[in-house]
Length: 99
Image 1 (cartoon, one colour):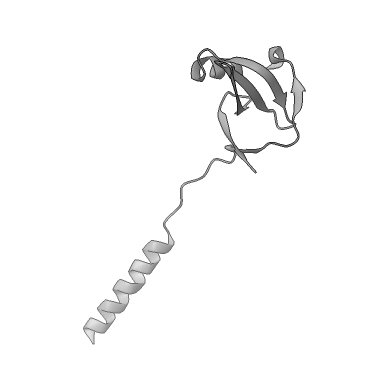
Image 2 (tube, rainbow, N blue to C red):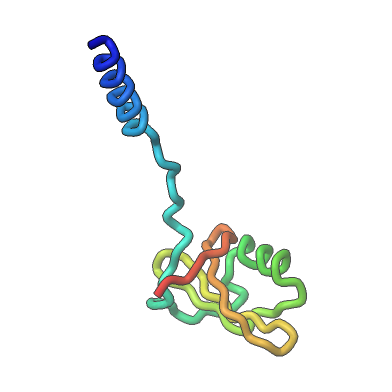
């Protein structure tokens, strides 16, 4: 009988421990949709975005720049003749496009 109580206590204790495990928080700003952007001139980009482009895309030039109402930026970068589209927040963090 004592073994039955011990087994029940272990099962309940293990379940309680599992139920209280916290999941890490996921940042919400990492995703962006490609809709709702308005073209702007490159000189209107925040300094943080310009710095991020210089740091992470050495030798690239900004062909076109766009902004949406959330102050997220869509950039068309020209790198050695090829055009690449990237997205950034106003603080210069790179964002991932979702469809």
